[in-house]
Amino acid sequence: MESRRVNILRDTDWLTIFLYLLLVSFGWMNIYAVNFSDQVGGFFSLDNRYTMQLLWIAVSLVLAIVIFLIDSRFYSFFAYPAYGIALFVLLLVLIIGTEINGAKSWIVLGPISLQPSEFAKVATILALAKFLSGYNVKPSKFQNILISFGIIVSAPLLIMIQPDFGSTLVYAALIFVLYREGLPGWVLLLLVMSATLFLLSVIYDELYIYMALIAIAVIGYGVYTRKIGHSLFAAFLFSLLYLGGIFLVRYNVLTIPPLLIFFLALITGTTVLIIIAISKKIRQLFPVMLFLFVFIGMVYSFDYVFNHVIAQHQRDRVEVMLGLKSDPWGYEYNVNQSKIAIGSGGFSGKGFMQGTQTKLKYVPENSTDFIFCTVGEEWGFLGSVGLIIAFTGLLLRLIIISERQRSKFSRIYGYGVVSVLFFHFAVNIAMTIALFPVIGIPLPFFSYGGSSLMAFTMMIFILLRLDSTRKSYLI
Image (cartoon, rainbow, N blue to C red; front, side, top):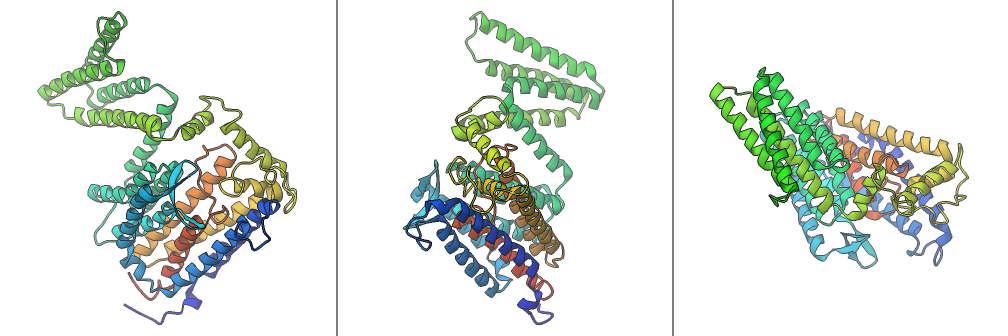
């Protein structure tokens, strides 16, 4: 219900728009600097990346104006249809999409290439905000947790098929939205433990991790129930069956794989322990068993996904970063060149358009995923810190805007935008300095590309449109 006359010019957060324009302008300057030597057909030729990016900036600004011309309540009402359309287009791109850089993620329309996965992030944030802002919907309820996770993971599952591992990972950032809205701490802890298990499953053989989980379960059961004898007996039985099976395989008495022996021994030991617990009426066993089997299932899933779903070049990047293999002329070469470029800028940089590492193509993807290298080389430590301060200022401003919303939908949407932007910002910079595997996600407002720039523009200006009427409407 309208409580006062809406004045968009008065109520718009112009500081956020200033920071947005500052970052977009600085980003274009760096794209221009790194691509000027490749100029084809003059400044206004669409064959030049900096000209195309200037065109995308103009399109994004028009899109921002259109967003402000639409009634703010539209974004809540249209959230679910937009989400449905996004999922449909992600399915469509698997059929008619064009493969670029090993991923079938693009729809090519003449000279224009669009990446639907970028726009799907906006639709997912809207849909999640719409659901969580519903009447009596609390993230602390198990049913609501499942629905929320369903909304979050549907798009990345389709994106994973393309495959585009980087865009898939971005959606994990939305867990912070749920936590802000009341998600129980144990769920966040479970996710942290899951991430830890994923890393361990990459570094160590899965059987070693299974053994460690069984040891934790045995100790936990003994401490939890104070029935150390029961757990030790089950552990002894499991060890006896497993080692006996391995012995028989070693001497060709059996011809079954060690993993199958492990699971048979585990099922047998667990069955015996369950029989003892039922006869002794010890109910505490079942949460421990649930913990054990859930985490064993997760490790098995992680191992399968890493070795059969994730592309080989992405596995190589993770393994090189973890020190599991060496690739001095492949992945390591790219990252080393990235660090050399950033380090060569020194304190104040080589100067605008004076970069050599980036302009001479020693750094890969120097105007897309590795655009931060251009900042480091030409603007130095001062420019890099200035960029980080500007991004941090934008994120803090968006958090302030989100917190002052009277509408629950607007607040949740705002935190969704902050989460996605922060993930892109932090991971992109981290991967250029070898603190994170190179997963191919753009630096917001800097990296060359129309899809990402338009998507990030939509995210921010929808929030600003919602904020401009925060005192007038309660969605």
